[in-house]
Image (tube, rainbow over all chains, first blue to last red; front, side, top):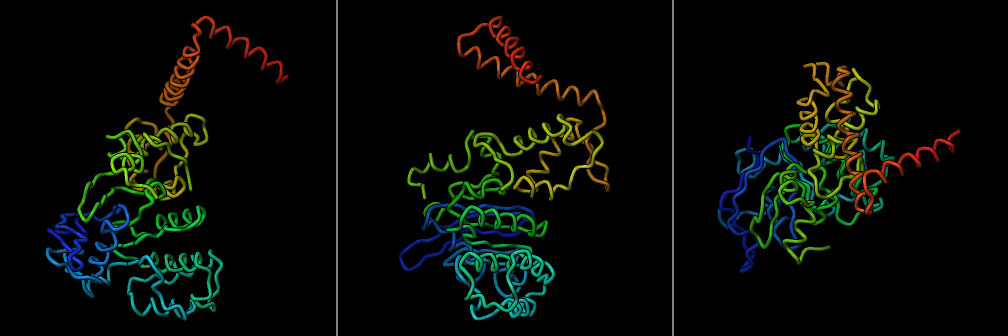
Length: 234
Length: 126
């Protein structure tokens, strides 16, 4: 069943065309990698899906609805920067999420926070960057959402943290949900992807099943893109 | 995280090979119950759909069978298990011969080297 659909979707920032008339259908029950170099339109697409931006033209729908309060109730969004009030401690965050999101599962969040070994009294702003990122991911994945939009969840983390993050995503997303992960680090997420969408200069260069792509090209997804788009690299 | 995958083969095939090895070696004994798709996926660090596909292929090969609610079990069909062991060892042997031949050795030389090797190493063990 199609969960996220874009039809002739465009977004301009002044004279800059960030997305150029893209058509895209993503089904539920999939983990999809949204990959592409910096400035290719990944974050713009995610922000349009989350109603933080409005389209210049074209349509985007989530579960058949135009993004707004109804879609935010079913979409769990992890921005690419700190997004929770930094003065709140974990107990306050639990209440905050519980108040805002009917699909929030406090027991799940409490278990993961316990396992991480962080205490309820500590404000988010006093934690290390790595811990704060993990805490934000825990809250994001503790919602039993229909769609997870994860914007660069593994950018700039060490390998152990990356494993923690991927494991947390894999073990917590609700079955039949759509998980959209944007990243420019393809190698790191490759084994967990069902599908890959490659953006380049605001257009979709390719949308294919991840294993089918490896079978067709005889290369890793990362290797394939490095070869086809020489400017790749990070 | 999880297993290591090489670049040029579909991940589901690599998972299948890994599971076949575990079944052939008896790490998953005949008749034993496999963990759930989700648990196995997590252990390997892959997408559950990819794990599902690998398991479906093993089912098609008759190496595992699923019992609707109880889960998936390793086959108890000893013929199927010895056929699996046979085909896996065949492919190891053919890889071995190919790399020995690439050193310029012929079949007889390879066989006598293998016999020497076995003789020397069986001494060491005793």
